[in-house]
Length: 227
Image (cartoon, rainbow, N blue to C red; front, side, top):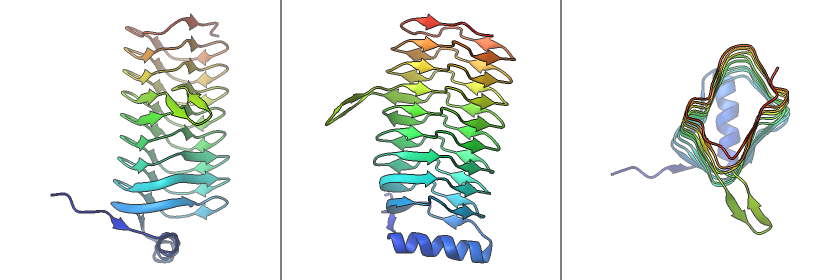
């Protein structure tokens, strides 16, 4: 029988972060039931561990600097993961993350890689204007449409005007919307093997220095004017 998650308040989240920084250890939020919170505007010098946690709302890292690892593996977010204009110097691990609304990592810098393998997302996956030093791996991720009060948010993936110094690995990814990779520079390979897009895939202005593997990829239409 699974043990119930331990509930944390906002005050306990901030206390754990402060204590972890003082003791120079990982801030441990794993296996916790957490409220919506924001670490925006902060510089954080310890690992953040949210492994197996459930967050009852959104998580905000706006204009934030994290000098260690951010671990969201197998976490459940009731709404949105938002990382904007931030710098992550350690590993970003969101393998098997489940997000009931969008993931938006816009205009942020990742000095290692991004691991979104087997992620489950309702709404779009936004990676526009990101810099990624190593690989971006979203293989076997599922991105679904979501109905809201104002309409439908399509299950798109956006990797526009980005720079990736490793490979982009989207093998067996499934998206109910489009894949937009316009004006992105990829220093190594683009792997789209057996990926499925219900909308179009746009590669206009995309610069790929390595190989492109689109074997078995399915999409509504391919718009490709690569460099």
